[in-house]
Structure formats: structure tokens, C-alpha cells
Length: 119
Picture (spheres, rainbow, N blue to C red):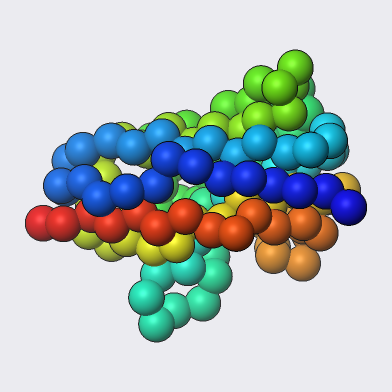
């Protein structure tokens, strides 16, 4: 069983920044971030391979969010800049065997952390 522990959520004004962290109990081939806005389905945000060199982003966050990985600590980060009210959501860390953008590509999930962006 792989455990993922997230931290770093909170409330911020539009234009601000937050950094999320996700510590995994073991190294996994792919790690990613998803989010679920209020009343909506969970959606892909960003992904990374073990090296941290290969990354992918949803169009809505590309250029504002950066995913990075500290392999020595089995930790992945999501730096979120220029936050917008529409970024408000519960953010989930995910880990699994497939470097994908679908929820079904990931096997393990964190508990979620709330990010609220006010205008």
C-alpha cells in the first residue's frame, strides 16, 4: 500500500501563490495532481515522471503552475502562481504506474487539500 500525504493548501487572494507538497511512502513511476472544483468532476492538473524532467499540464494551468519532484524524498510539489478564483478546488495528489492525465491512470490518492482563491 502506498500512502500519500499532502500539505500546503489554504486561502489566498487572486494573483497570489501557494505551494502544495505530496510525500509518498515509496517511489512511484508517475505522480500527478488533480483537482475537484465545487460541484464539478475531478480534473487533471499536472503530472511528472520519476526524473522530474518529463512534465505535463492542463491547458488551464499551463504557464502558471509548475510541478516538480524530489526523488530522494519521494515528494512531488505543485507551485501555483497567479492564482485565479476558478482555481478554487480540493487538490489531490495521485501516484501510479501510468504517466497519464486520466484519473484511471493512477492507483493511489491523497486525502485532498483545499485551495480557496478569493477575488
